[in-house]
Image 1 (cartoon, rainbow, N blue to C red):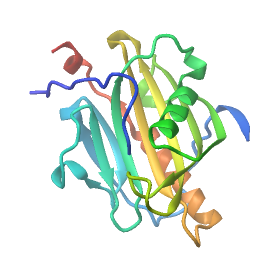
Image 2 (cartoon, rainbow, N blue to C red):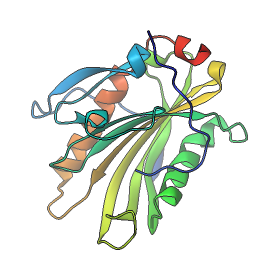
Image 3 (cartoon, rainbow, N blue to C red):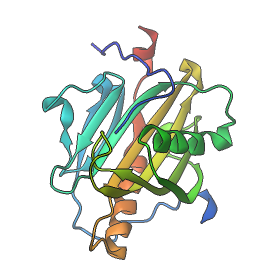
Length: 207
């Protein structure tokens, strides 16, 4: 039985060039291994890097989120169901959420490197877009720690039939020694997550 997922009311929550489409390239490296996970009781599924752990087994996670993290690297992937923001155009919505995330996390800087539309195999018929950029945040929620630069990869799937905005957010700390190769592997991981993401059923929204 699917869980009764509650959508998050919009607002609140912590955790270059414009491309028309995001190029989905073949794997450049065998270093990253992936695992397939069911999300929201089988409503969706996706492939995630194997080092990510389901944080609901560690601490309480809001039921509108699925939260996976790697304790060694600090990288995390969040899937989030939100009430649809109706006063924002489809082509501007993902940037809207990106900027709102920066605001929620008190980011001192926020910049976008790339954004555009997506055509994902598992999301046919839904407006889907992405943005890749960086947020400069504090490591601590009380803002008393050192600054941390995050590489933020975000995708938005607008589920208009159930008046929901579905977010996929991958955040990776950009620390000393972060190389161009590291950045390429992050993008490859994000692309793999998106290519594998599949909407299995929307029945959960009808309960």
